[in-house]
Image: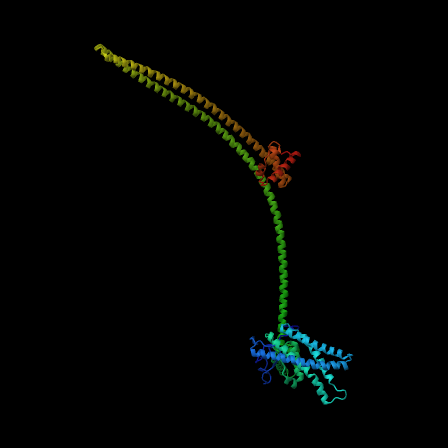
Length: 573
């Protein structure tokens, strides 16, 4: 807490108050004053307004409700009586003494004052009931009530010299208004206690103290109101602590308090501002702590600012490095694309050379294979011819054997027949002759069949020879076609090799010219158009997409159109 801070309110009463803490090397108090300096018992104080925290929230019983209603009726009756008496006295006094001109105007003045008081009282009670009290509205009510009391008292003043009975009469005219306003305040406090039971209790100073020590009591009342101390015993305890501290200082410095340090005099200096002895003595330490905390907070803010500055610098450096990295990445990408194009061109040239070598080797292998195939075919045909000839010879020998057997059987039959003819000319001889004739006929038929077989064999050999001739012609055509295909492939390989060389020279020229990737792609398409005969429409978009790895046909069409314009402008690979 600092000097400018609002002092703490109502510290908890402590029946045994320790001596104040040492400040700047101040020794401990010689004695400890238990409770208060004197042996005066605790005050039993009355509450001025508000309620404590132990108010019952139970509903009113029937008897309590009847009692409350009776009190309200009595208060209304008292209000009516006060208004009636006040009205008559104030109206007449206003007409006669206050120069209102007529009794009616005096009556209107009295009615206005009384109605104003009643309206403000009603508003005050209503707002208190709604837990929204208006504190300042009570002061105009008191002012108007005081005016009514004065006017009522003045209406009873004598015309001549005052006597004792005149003072009593003047006072009697103001009794009812004072009584009425007292009842209203009582009702307001009662409502406040009902609707706000949690409101802190405010003690009132006992009347006996006002009588016995009016000046000191007035100072206590002022300090309680200024610094929000609601407990009268707490206020007394603070005064007793301050007096005990002063006595301790006097004993320490042998009656000369001026020798005390500034820190030791703080309780006396700060008491008018609501500080207790302990709070005042703790002020230097609290202020030093607060100053240290402020210094630490300032140092923390400075460090935070330095940290933020360093972070900003680091972020700026990081952004610069990221930008530099992006530039390096783009440069590396361009170099990579250039290297890739060069490697691709070299790979194409190498692939074309390897393809040409492989094609030449394949062609040589094909010629050798063709020669071997022809030799094998010739050998196979000779073997087939020999096999066919052997089979024909075998068939002819078989037929000759069968014919010889037939002739042998016929000769045997003739021999038998001759022997039989010589022996007996009978029917059997005739049958033998007939059998021999039949045998001869069969032999002739066998000869005819053998001739037919030889003819069929000769026809088969002729057809086979024709087929072999046609096969030779087909093989010759196939060999010629293979040779032509090899020549075409060799020419294509030569063309691709030349195209690869042209592509390599073009890539090297583009590297020297440091063309952009799109310009390189357009020139590449131009070379493809040139290789296709110079007509851009003959180059399919699919070939451009495949060659340049472009997914959009629209982009491929743009490349082809720009390449055609480039060729039309005189570009030659």
